[in-house]
Image 1 (cartoon, chains in turn orange, blue):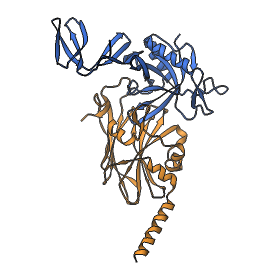
Image 2: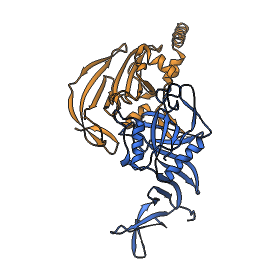
Image 3: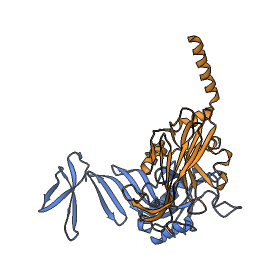
Image 4: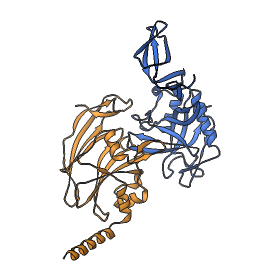
Length: 222
Length: 237
């Protein structure tokens, strides 16, 4: 009986190993490991998630770019990433342990330049779920960040909460001053089969973002 | 000054209400000391001395450890904004400091068929020297950078009139030379980037010499970076 179980386990192990694409294994090995609850709400927390490589020349931790061949295989399938609209750079983030049934990763997407200030150098955080073979189960762009957009992201076992701030000041001619904005909160849940679903979006509220001198970033005024 | 064992020494500074001041490096780590009836306050183990309006030397104990040349003040930064290109904004920054980008164009790298900078060319040292000379004279200098994997703007002839590799223009704002026993051991260049108001003058915007190329990155915050390689240096006339 014991021999039978051992052989059965070996077969299952070998089947799974055969199923997993070596490129997918390499791709996953470049992500860091995120801890739940995971919060990205300022430069420091963002750096902890997305600065995955130490640059010995500049002596700082930096974002680690995902090669284009990997991007097209594991991120930008089915025109999800809109590659014709500009050039996008993708960086490794972290794996997030949300379920044993699927793999969850956070990827940083950056658009170089853009047609308007709303999409100029726009950064997004992508949440992607995969099955063990490396097939995409679900993808969602959770946040937007540039001079017009600020975001705060929280991931827990129970769900995902994104506060999105849209700076509505007519002209951002001078930085480091109070700016008018709108904000709203969207919640998502991931189903047991790995599908990311928006659950709720709050009404839009107006407010002010203020410059935080110590952390050199904008924060929403209470 | 001779290099002395730095243990137990500190810098002390005296200032009066008329703005007169003096600085000295003395043994001990007392909060203050008396010299010729004047009270000097302890300012720590490092001291940055202004040599002129654009040059400073930083001492760690009595050893000069770095020298910084500044070409442009932060108040003269110009963001490109909507509809204004990076070249115009960079030119405006230079104009605010009384210089321009109308002089010699020194292309300092080779590029591949996609317009991606590859290796330093024979003019690289000349171009880097031009950057050094401008900053050492207290002036900023404009440079073009490559960062896109495919050339979109500044197409080379016959498709355009550009150099076929420059994607963006920035202004080199300062350089810091690290010193060891009076010798320059490394150089770090800071730049003002017109593409973003919030991080345009960030001290994290740096370039270094790597295989005779000036390379670095513009950091949008800490996690989104745009890697730059300097392609062309635009001297002032």
